[in-house]
Length: 77
Length: 163
Figure 1 (cartoon, rainbow over the protein chains, first blue to last red):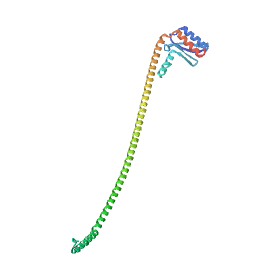
Figure 2: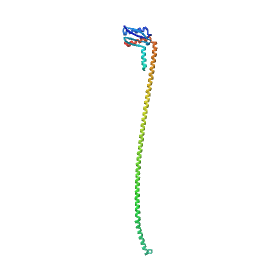
Figure 3: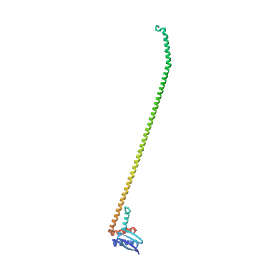
Figure 4: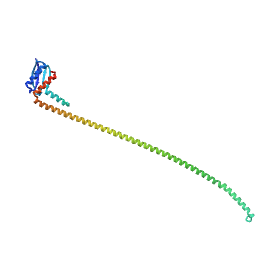
């Protein structure tokens, strides 16, 4: 078994988390041992830490990226 | 013959001789000097007249030379004046052109500065609006990310991975 830490918003329903785990298994293999970590700061989406890689698809990160773009003076995200 | 008595004949002859002597003496002593004097005077007058004519001619020539010099001076003055006018006009036009160029440059720079300032203000406004929008979006999303949104995020992510 390989450890797979999935950080999500506490508001995410169990059904949706189960759907996410199903997609993770389909992508990375059934031996991925998925563990849920709740973090209200992510706002939405998820972050997957698996095999030393981090896949960040949280709303918080997207907002941070947008904030960085605007802070640098960019006009579009 | 009664009038001319014999004793009077001698007197007559003596008188005639005296007159002749007087004539020759007078001619010798008076006529030649007077004639010479008159001739000399005439020559002097002729010389004076010739001199006066030459002087008049020289004066006329001098006047002509003076007139020519005056005409040349007048022409040169006109030339200098026209040259000075042309130079002054050229200098004025050059100054005017420089002033126009400088004014255009000032206007161009002012326009560029205004455009740059406008662009900076717009960029600042865009940034502020964007940042405010991001903050608002964060606050809204913190409350309102639905299950459907979550599933769409999941699907989009794995679709990007190639599933």
